[in-house]
Image (cartoon, rainbow, N blue to C red; front, side, top):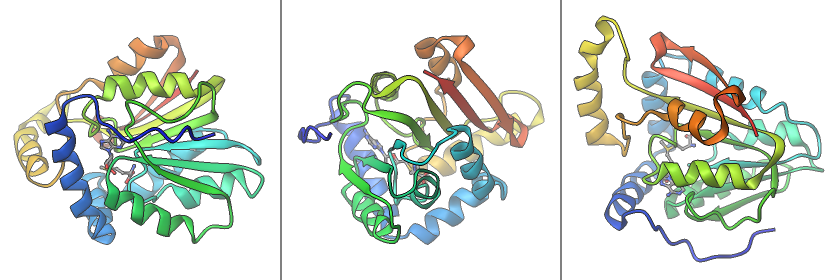
Length: 227
Ligand SMILES: C[S@@+](CC[C@H](N)C(=O)[O-])C[C@H]1O[C@@H](n2cnc3c(N)ncnc32)[C@H](O)[C@@H]1O
């Protein structure tokens, strides 16, 4: 299924090498990354991952893509749903993340393929998978618009895409915190807080195909797309 294309970033070499450097560093400290993410999601981190996987409505035997899989925290949840007759395909551009995700994949008794590739140029044929998730990553992938187009291409019509991500406060007094959060994130992550991911998902898939659940004052969301 994997076409074996070289993992070339086509967006902007500098943005991608910055992302890779940051993520390679985090991949050496998966526990620390979990702690950071838990803080960012006000303790809802694990629950929101489960909700995201629930939204995919997976069945035994399904083939599911985990786009920008990081160290693979979704892998056990996805593997549990698709079972041994199914498969999980993880894709990430950071070499360190791929190593960490492969280690995590060895802990589950389900076929898991972790590939180093660019989300904007997936080495997968059209309609390759029945579902895909992308957690905490559309806001971090340099060319996220092409990554969304790739999700549309590789998920079969009728399949689902679930996106978990974070955004700054959009309204209310919480907005006063945005500069602080943006500053800390710029130091520690490759987050692009100014993106309008929900608008981008609606534009790519059609507004009537995107359902949104918002959490934590709107700073976290799970978007479920029916392709
Ligand atoms: C904040 S981490 C989230 C990882 C994981 N999905 C999670 O939920 O913990 C963002 C991930 O996006 C990956 N990434 C960044 N640019 C990418 C690209 N062009 N293609 C694939 N993955 C990319 C990073 O390497 C990193 O693993």
